[in-house]
Image (cartoon, rainbow, N blue to C red; front, side, top):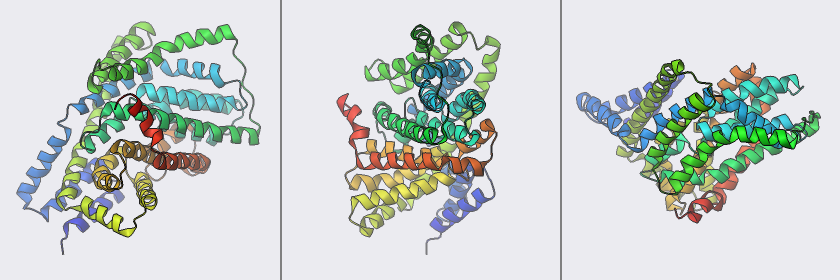
Length: 431
């Protein structure tokens, strides 16, 4: 009996249970597995080679640039201006502050490309305001946490870049464009939950904004929102690639934060750069070790075996996609998005392509699925950020998140079984 697969699964699970950082867990489990496949010496060399190959990609250069752009935007006073803009749009509705929270998270997530940054920046402003207005603290935090995930679907998104790498070359531009409608659909779904809860609990109606004041607020927010137009518009028009767009985003964010809004001082730039380097190092280590594990999975023919067994289990495309979604939802509860995408894309992609599903469609489905995972215990990164920002406990926050989970899963099923939602915009633009 081949021991490599049991060794991989057991060692990885054991390392995670011992709270070993996931990047190290991936690398150590892969190395131990290779000891049972090839000799220890070549195993070490092979892991090192695969890790180096995994991060040797031009497309991945976009990740540190988008991280830096997000850091600059997060400190550049963008959040406050976007919150004011969202309040001018929907603040006068019953329970309006909840809608403002969702809309501001969508705007900021799309600009920064980071769900954690959105939860921290928007939650830091909105949760105290909502608490003061009589909204329930756990509801306020749940709104922030769930809405922050939309930034991983609405471009620019680092996770979509990682999926492009893992899938073997799905167009990053097509993925970016495909994320718009699903991201907006998730946002509308979350707003519907806010509407129901606000009506049931009789949350206050926000104050209206006079037209002239609203126009001034909008003009202040336009420079921030233009980042998305410049980045995505430039990609669609063929002016630059996604990687080049990330460098443009840094330049624009730097000018906006330092020279226009003047909320980032030149003396703060070394600290921002250091934080960017730290985050990039973590992401790249995850990508490297995940790529090594993906290689050993492929070497052991695990993707092919799983594909054959799922197809043999049932001939129903509906059921197979339901099973895949259930597996990914469970994976998302225990694993961060980046390694999950890198490990499970090579496993699941052959299955769905045999069913006639386009890789672009699968990428959006997978990312949305794993977005739910980062809000769920035991290792949801957004869950911990939300608890810190909202000053609450995981058990209380999880209960408040249940209706938001339900809507996100409903949207996930719609996206899974209605390809048009993901593919309409890319096909209309020739991708």
